Structure formats: structure tokens, C-alpha cells
Image (cartoon, rainbow, N blue to C red; front, side):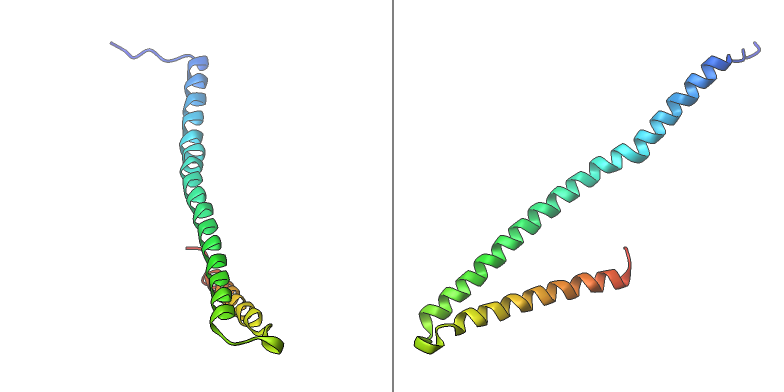
Length: 105
């Protein structure tokens, strides 16, 4: 039996369905997968930030309680903690700039 040719309307309809399926496959599905990675990244960065703040506050509290810096030296634990915070920020900035120099993975 000879194969019957499809009409133009049927071909256009099939082409449209093919385009829509392709666009869903190449855009919507990767964006859904990307959303999970972004969510984990945001949660991880929040936990890390809170942990670092708590660590710095614990260090400040330990310096205030365990050292004998009183009177004119009462400001020293705050300066030491501030320097520690600056070191952490500098290390983070260095890591970020090193990743940018390498280029995207």
C-alpha cells in the first residue's frame, strides 16, 4: 500500500509539538534542576555565615574572659576579633578572585 501524504496542517501541528517539546527539554527541565542547587547553596551559605559569626563572638568572649586586658587594654579583644574577621573576609575574597581568574568550569 502506498503511504498517504500528510496535509500541511498536520505537518505544522507536528512541527509545533516538536518545537514545544524541545524547548521544554532544553530550558524548563534544566532550570528546575538548577533551582535545587541554588537552594542548597543559599542554605549552605546562610549556615556558614551564622557559624562564622558565632565563632567570632565565641572568640571575643574567650578573649574578654580569659585575658587580663582591662582598663586601658579593654579594647584589645575587640581589635583582635576585628582582625580575625578581616582575615576571614580576605581569604574569602581571595578564593572568589582565584575562581574568576581560572574561568568558568
